Amino acid sequence: MTQAAFFILTALIDEPRHGYGIVREVEELSDGDVRLRVGTLYGVLDRLAADGLIELDREEVQQGRLRRYYALTDDGAAAVSAEAARMAAGARTAAGRLAAHRPADARPQPTARPGRPGLAGGGA
Image (cartoon, rainbow, N blue to C red; front, side):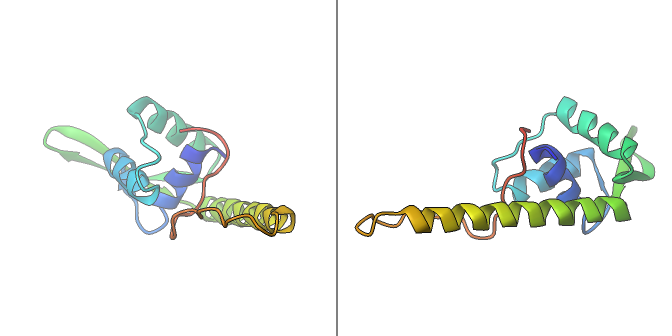
C-alpha cells in the first residue's frame, strides 16, 4: 500500500469526505509530510474505489461545483488495520535490531515525533 493510499484511507475512518477535505485531513494526519496533488488524489481514489476499499457516499452541488464524498468500506477498514499492524511490526523489528547493535557508549538517537502513524511504503 502506498503512503498516499494509507493516509487517504486513514482520513476516511471517521467520516466521509470530499476531495479537498481529504487533502486537508491527510496533511494534518501526516504532520505536513504528505501533500497530495489533485492528480495524485483522484488517481488513488479511483484505484481504491476499484479495489472496493472506498465507495462514493454522496454527491452535492456547492457554489455551482459538484462535490463527491467518499466513504471507507469494511474492506477498506480491514486494509488500514492490516497495514498499520504491518508497519508497527516493522518498526518493532527495526527498533529491536538497533537496540541490539548499538554500541554501549553510543548516544540515543532522536525518535520519531509522537502520535505519527508511521509511513506506508511508496510515495505520495
